[in-house]
Amino acid sequence: MRKQTKNSPRPNTLDVITMGCSKNLVDSERLLRMFGDAGFEVRHNPEEPHAAQVVVNTCGFIGDAKQESIDMILECLEAKKAGKIGQLSVMGCLAERYRKELPAELPEVDRWYGKFDWPTLLQDVTGKAAAEDRARPWERQLTTGPHFAYIKIAEGCDRFCGFCAIPLITGRMHSRPIEEIADEVRSLVASGTDEFNIIAQDLSSYGKDLYGHKALAELVQTLADIPGVEWLRLHYAYPADFPYDVLPVMARNANVCKYLDIALQHVSDNVLKNMRRHITGDETRRLLERIRREVPGIHIRTTLMTGYPGEGDKEFDELLDFVREQRFERMGAFAYCEEEDTFAARNLPDEVPQEVKDDRLDRLMELQEKISLELQEEKIGRTLRVVCDSEDEEFFVCRSEFDSPEVDPEILVSKAGAPYPLRRGEFYNVTVREAYPFELIAEIAEETNE
Image 1 (cartoon, rainbow, N blue to C red):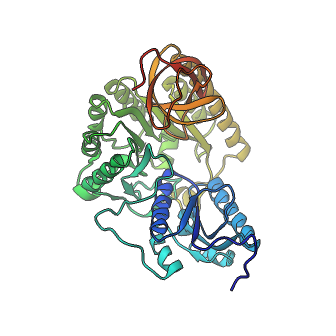
Image 2 (cartoon, helix red, strand yellow):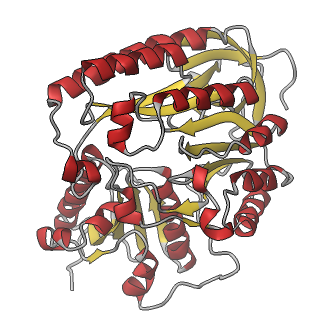
Image 3 (cartoon, rainbow, N blue to C red):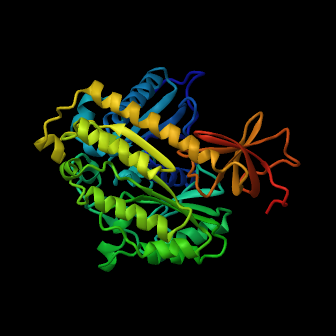
């Protein structure tokens, strides 16, 4: 039995640390709810882990994310040695992918779980199974709001892109029924949530495994019809076989944000073929043109990659021209990192030097920063509807329908000039006065708040 010291954690305490994407966050929130219902005092992402039970929910997508997860595990093991942590468990994508290797390399970790077997953790810790509510399997403790939440509508992916290990980790796509998702949203609305970020590895294929056809449009319309839903925002659509019937749903429903997160990765036909993306550069352009035509004012967020096998100077110049031409409102990018067991790792030599990948990434993001500033400046003088997320010493921190939490620009309203305090989770009309590449400065509009 561990000797108690003044630094020893209190019994029945749990800290959960989430690495990676919002899909992981949903799993962490479910775990927090399970332990909270069992009488544990729970915390999410504490500044310093200090609990009887600590769980690291890992990411295994790319090299940097994997290293961050490993570093966090090692940091927690040091805290365990110091007596600040009772037991350490690891779950999530990295643990799923390296089920055999990691326990052998890090035997000090008390328990290992993958992407799907973590619900047994409570029983393994306490000897008692979690209270299971089969009618409400989505129950969780929100860490985001309570005014906004992520809604995970599917798990897994059937695409098998050349660079991506996600299907190796999560398996084939499994969609949740529309009725169950709608019940979850109604439950969250009843508890005060009114903004919903719809997430999946591949939104475009939602429903094919359940209904035999793509059902994203039906799902979005069902959710938009729920009273109390103020904003729905769509994340992680796939460009090939895009469900065009969702566009009129977005256009006619005011509570469906004019926003789409769709990872394009590249535009060169040669690179797209090597990536196994099943789309050409011209088809990508036609897709974007139709999205913008059918949903006027939409803000598109995309992700691009530099240095993938087959990307020479010509292909990269084509990518730069594509970004200049499309003027994406939101864009992220990363340099290719070979992932073992993927198609690219098995079949395509990683011939682009790292310094070239990084230089191309820098040039791409410098271009996007310039474009972002120009697009942001076009908003000066416009009145936008925003939600207040938080506040600091000088500003109320807000977002518009065009801004997804944590990844997109913020809209800052000066406290000194505000006629009244803004409340977290409430909506307001603001007028943009200054623009920067990744933030706007605004003031309360003359109209009254909503």
